[in-house]
Length: 123
Image (cartoon, rainbow, N blue to C red; front, side, top):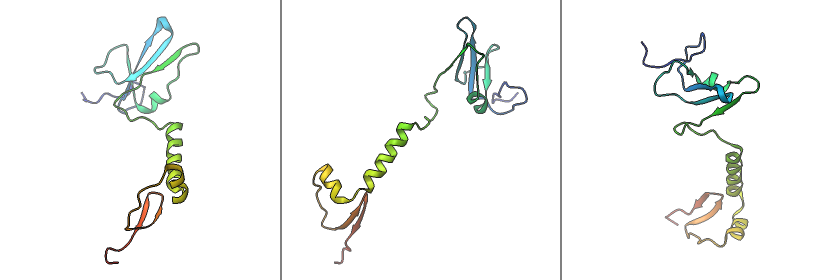
């Protein structure tokens, strides 16, 4: 017997990453992290089948997040990244006006975003 649990779907041999259970009284399908051990009335699903899971009409699917899984990027993450790139690309004069005066390094010749041009120590 293999120590890796496999997807319960027919003809799928991929490793299981999630467990599906049904709460018939509430017409709810619950998809959560892989259970610690296999139970007869639960279904282990691979990543592909767990993402494509749909429930019958009138049923609700509850997806429980796994705290150990990496979070997927959201629209807010993309917007924050775009704002950080815009801020880094602003010219130095406008950045000084917006954020107050910065202490100027005597070795610094020019600045562009987070990049600096420094004088040679010999000069």
